[in-house]
Length: 270
Image (tube, rainbow, N blue to C red; front, side, top):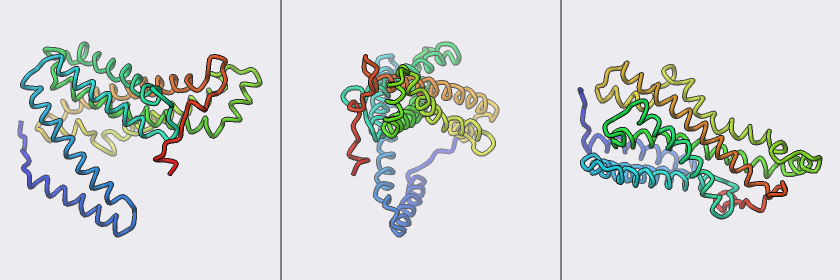
């Protein structure tokens, strides 16, 4: 494979572009210059750290280490989902709804891919398991976060409509059905857009990476089709699960709407 290695100066040149963007945003008073620089530093640190960890993992293949890294990735994704919520569930639910949904969808789809489709030896080979799970979690995380945010914000805004339906005798699932469907749809829109644009407007990341690394274009295309289908499935199942669990949590055993189970985060209220 004709792989062109990058050196430190190559990355410095790319970093200067981000610095220029930060300076321009400061000049235009966009209020994001510091956030942009911090995000760039955080991205660099996180990617260097994961690169170091993956080097160790590839040199010492063991299912326990793969499971540990997968758990850390899941917990980090769950925290990010929680932090993106304007109206967050109180207690464990604020963290657990998104985390559980991502676990059930992303891990299940990744395991099916490793055991049935790709079938590496061993099946937990980190070269395949970690990148696949990372792509699944990253996309599912966005869908779950968007779906839960739409669910809780819509319920808060339409409280009287929902309670009127409950008074008329509608069960909780019917009283919130339109909001729940809308939240699921919103969570899956980014994935639908990505699938519609793939190959026409943009070349997806995995395909681009393989081509840059010297892979045959058609082989890269086949892997990208596989990944797009897997991500669509994981995002869809995860979003549906999170919205369903979240919607059920908003009602008690007597089917009363319980907005006291939500709190508005300081990040959004300030």
